[in-house]
Image 1: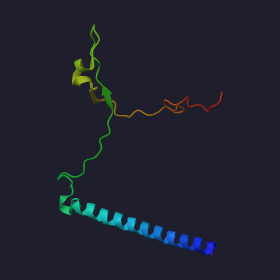
Image 2 (image 1 turned 90 degrees about the vertical axis):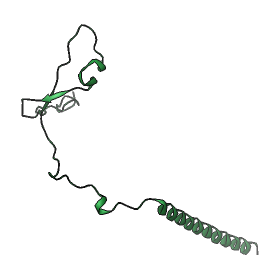
Image 3 (image 1 turned 180 degrees about the vertical axis):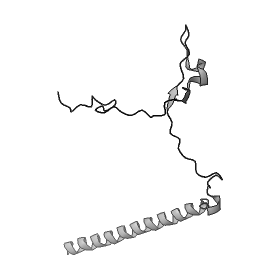
Length: 116
């Protein structure tokens, strides 16, 4: 009799747990629907950004070289520099873009075969 009572209580406990889980899921669904109703609707097609009349803007690839830092007898702080410390640059007369040297890996290691 004790085993039957234990398995019956376990069955009822599982049913109650299942009902609680379903109730929580339904509550979450109702809460989500309420929140979604308060949000503004998605933008319409005519509200979306459009291309400018002259068409798409394309990337410009050009070589740039920095302007020289002004020479002076005292230390120059960033706010004393031209463009308030932002390094100005100008188009480079050299049209060929710089590339890595063959056999070099840039700043990571020597680019050699490794080892010794």
